Length: 595
Image 1: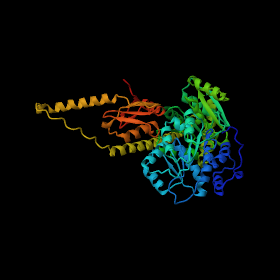
Image 2: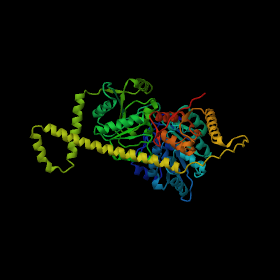
Image 3: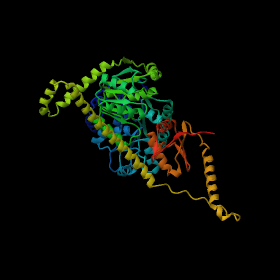
Image 4: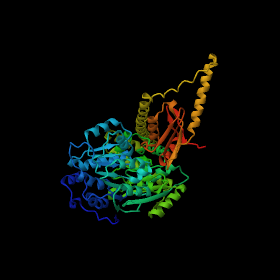
C-alpha cells in the first residue's frame, strides 16, 4: 500500500496520545504534526512495517520516535533494550538520541547511544545498567552484538534512519547482519530521503508487507528554500569569489560546504584572515572536537562552519539562514543533503552555489532532474564590494563600541577626526584591530587542531603500548654437516631475504573478489608495529568512518592489503594523495596492482 498524498498537518492535541507523550512534545515545543509525522503515526501504532521516503528536515525523528515511545513498556527490572535505531553517523545518532530523550523523559524511557571512536567501558556499563532504546551506528552496534554485550531478544521495534546514507557509506553489510540478529516478531521502520534499488530489495526481505509512505517524493528542494547561484569570476581566486558572495548575501549564520578537506581548510583560514568568524569541520576530526565545534555553532559563537560532506548528515542547527556550496557536489543526491541543513521544519532558508565551468554538468542535471527554479545573481564590481565591506565593518564596530565603556577616549577621537592625516591614523587602528581579531581566530583554530592532534597521538600510543603478540617462530631447519661455522651469518641473511621475497610473492595473490569492494595497498605492516586492530583504527580514522564488517585485510611484514567498500576506499585513497603521515613518516595508500 502506498500513501502519496498524506493528510494535512494536524495538531498533536487532536491525536490519540498518552499524557506522557503530550508532555514530551510540549517540552520540545511541538504543537502541529508535520506531514510525515501525521502520515506515519496511525499505521505505526497499529503495528505496520513502514517504508518512508521523506526529505531531510521534515521531522522524521519524531515521526518514528513518537510511536516508539508510546509502545515502550517502562520497567526498571528490564535490562535489555526494546527498540533499536541505526544511524549512519555519530552526529545523527546523538541528535536522534537527544530528541528522543526529551520526548520520552516524562514516561521515564531510558535512551542510550552506541557509536565508534569512543571507549567501550562507558557503553558496557550503560548496557549493564539497562536501557529501553538503543541509538547507534552499525559498526559499533554489531561489535557489541558479537561480543554478546548487547542482547536483542526483547527488541520489538527497529528503525533504519537515513538508510540511503548507510548504503552509500558502505554499512549495508553491517545493517543486514544486525537485522538478521533481531527477533522475527518485530516491527521495522525504514526512513530514507531516496530509495535505491538495493534498499528496495532489502525492504522486501526484512520488512513484512510494509506500508509505503512517500512525502514529497522526487522533489529535491525543501519547501521554503530559495536556490541561488553565482557564476565564478575566473579573474579572481576562488576564495575571494566566496568572500564577495558573502558580502552580498550577508548570512547571519551559514554552513559552507567544500568537496575536499584541503578546500575546507583553505577557505576557513582565508575567511579568518578577512576578519570573519569561521572554523573547519571534516571527517578527520575526533568526536569530542566535532561536538565542541557544533556546540559553538548552535550557541551562535560561530558564524561560518566550513564543512566537508561527512558532516552533511546529522547537523541540526536551529534558524540556519544559509547553506553555501563552495563547489557543487559530484552527485545530485549530495546536494539534497547539503541544502536540507536549512529551511528545516517549514522555516525559510537560502541555498547559494558558486558555479564554475566544471560544475556545468551537475548544475544542468540538477535543473533537469529535479526542476530547480535557480535564481541567478551577479557578483558586484570591486568598488561595490568595497562599499559593502565598509558598511558591514562600520556597523559591526559601532555595535561593539556601544557595548564597551569608551567615554575617556571620545575627546581624543573627536580631536583625531579634525586633525590632518586622521584617515591614515584610523586606517592604522583598524589594521591593528583586525590583526588582533585574526590572531584570536587563528589561536582558536590552532587550539582545535592541537586537540585533534593529541587525540590522534593518544589513539596511536595505545596501540604502540599494547603491541601484537609476536608470531610463532618457524621450526629450525635441519643442520647441515658440511656447513662451515664461519659463514653461518651469511646463510641466515640469505634465508631472511628468501623468506621476505616469498612473502612479497604471496602478497601479490589477490583475495577472492568481493562485489563493490576495492583492494588497496598500504606501505605499513607488522614491522611497523601494525596488527589487525591498529590497521582498522588507522584506516578508519583516515576515511572518517567506522571499519565496515565486510572489509578485509592481509598484513605482511613491510606492507598490507585492505579490501574496502568502493566509497570508503575512494575517500581513503584521496586522503593519502593529499598527504598522510604517521610517526612523522609518509604513508602511502593506493589501489593494489594486479598481475
